[in-house]
Image 1 (spheres, rainbow, N blue to C red):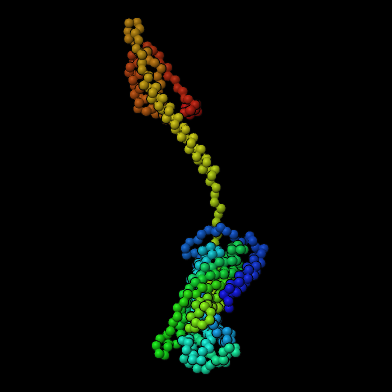
Image 2: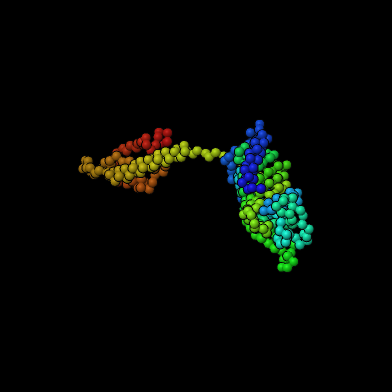
Amino acid sequence: MNFKKFFLTLIAVSAVLVTASAQVIKGAEAQTLRGPYETNRLFDNIFFGVAGGINLYQGEQDHSMDLEKRLAPAWQAYLGKWVTPSFGLRIGYYGGRQKGFYHNDDASSPYVPAWSGNPFVDPVDNYKWGYEQRFQTHSIRADVMWNISNAISGYRSDRFLDFAPYLGIGAIMATTVEKDPILDKYLKEHELGVTLGLYSMFRISKALDITLDVNQTMVNQILDGEAKDSRREFIGNVSLGLAYQFKNREFSRAHAPVDVTSYSNKIKDLSSALDAVNAKNKKLNSDIEEAKKNVTPEYVVRDGSEKVVPSPFAVYFQKGKSKLSEDQVMSIQFYVQEAMAKSKDYIFVIKSAADSATGSAATN
């Protein structure tokens, strides 16, 4: 099978399946969440799956062999994580048997078993005789997955059917099914493979899915022990299995960010007003201190005796306080001792007042 044709076919199938998926959820849009989504913790939305199926190796001369004779068992186990409802990562082990066709009369391919002594008739006229190849493959592969159902139709935790095309790369090891009789060991070949596939999830419960995985892996032609015509060969696979979803299994839609601009502006205005009040208060305190320095009693002589005629004198309370500070108390003591004590025949009048900037009638 041509890799390009498989890719185009996969895109077409995905489009059809997404349309079917959208029809499944039609009429239930209220339960469908669209992004952006909250980012879950590292170990949330983890899934583990196992599956079994069939492999179909597509080498240079394998088309000369009947299709049903080329099918071989396959198995897989993987662990993955959905980073978002649409984007996921997966790593797993993919193993299985491979069957192919080898047309040389000498059966010199390492993958032609020693017991395979009976050639079969090739239905294609180009080659009359050939041998069946058998070998084992083991692969560790990492996949990048795109849940096209969630990406296009929106996320739903209870959707019955989800589709996720994926692209993967992995290391593949091919081995003989029996030891080489001369070297007394299994012969091996190591190559890289690129995989394109479609992962389908049929939800049967919140935690469990039935999975269908259809993929095509492109490898170097030497993987099957032959290097003749094409540079690329392919391994087709179809597997059916189960996948378990670990908690936390769901996604939540991210809340819209709160606009705090108005609050920030209000705080800025209040800070500016507070700075202005503090500056004015500082100016008033400076004026008070300056006034204290200029308040001194005047001494005059009346009827031949020395009398004290005090100038108007102010006592200042701190804003919001009813107790005088020490310097104000000292000022009063000075007046009592120097003015009032020496002017017993005078009447002293005490008045109180508050300016509009630092107090009010109700406060006073």
